[in-house]
Image (cartoon, rainbow, N blue to C red):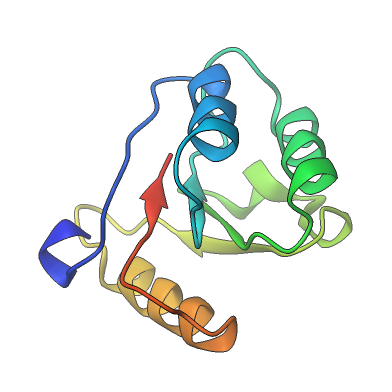
Length: 110
């Protein structure tokens, strides 16, 4: 994503995700792996939505089963991992940022 001009921050666990979102410069989008250590995905999305309800989130996973309840989580999208290619993810990021009125090429992969 950095090669596409985005600023990328990486978090190792759910606690770091929340730190990045709450304590650094504003983010335009969050990309999450549903198997992120130290938190279940529903609890993490609830925390994000409580503080930043309009922040778009993309779950990037190998299986839609990882995000079965996605419809009830607010502005959350799903992009399936396809081997080593991130072309679908790049497209989803671009579309979401354009939809939400991207101001700068800033994305945070968490």
